[in-house]
Image (cartoon, rainbow, N blue to C red; front, side):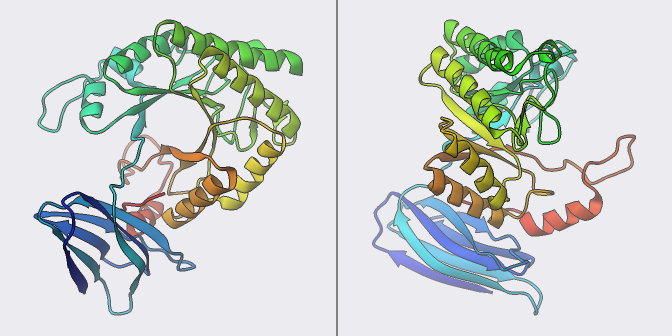
Length: 367
């Protein structure tokens, strides 16, 4: 089923179509904006349970004074889709950041990894990414990593490569010798016997060392994360969520180190579970109550575990307005395969994959 309307008398410029939509889950549901021979679509994911609405946005460029708006749905007789508050406005919607975490690139290259364009021609991985729209790259940094990667020396070298291509740099401080996330925030071995005042100083010194070194070589970080997915705090147990005053003090120390190195560098506070608005409010209410300064909110969103796209959008809209900050989906990933016939276990099984594929295929969402 398709409903359409043509609109004429438009200026030859960019226009954006916005609409709220929901769907029970059909074979194909989308709204489209066709201008000339170019049609841009925004696909509607299944929004059950709860029939939550999601706002979709598509932009297109008018070349002959007119465009056609289409609402399309195709599914079984018992399925449905709804659209509401449809508007066409002169503007162009575009995400300001299109990024990727390239922390493992140097290690991959050292071990023989090569990268190719879709036509098979080999090229530098960063050039390929830039040619496909990348404008921001994230690099994690560990204090004393066992394998010798993800340290200050690597970040300094990678920052020069990024700057030569005009790609901005985001630095992700884990404050650990290995991965830090909501399930583990282990202190670096060198800091394990520090008292809290020493921990605060270590956070400052480590952050300042990396950030000031980047600035000194002419590649200051454009953005810095003080901690990685710190829902449950960092540097356990001193800075865990049972000790919010301590966590706030550690974050303030890291923030100050960043600004002392480069006043223009943005500071992000990054949590996981992007679809959980209750958790996000609890965490940032605690942080703002303690006057922790920050510039940007970052969230991770993994659709297998972190809720629907509608829940993500609702959360980002809410916390952006509630705390008057820009928001970034700092981490997102999707399974490269649902096959299970290799020697490695899958973190997401086939049943989970089929559910998410059905719910989130081909989605273009404004957050």
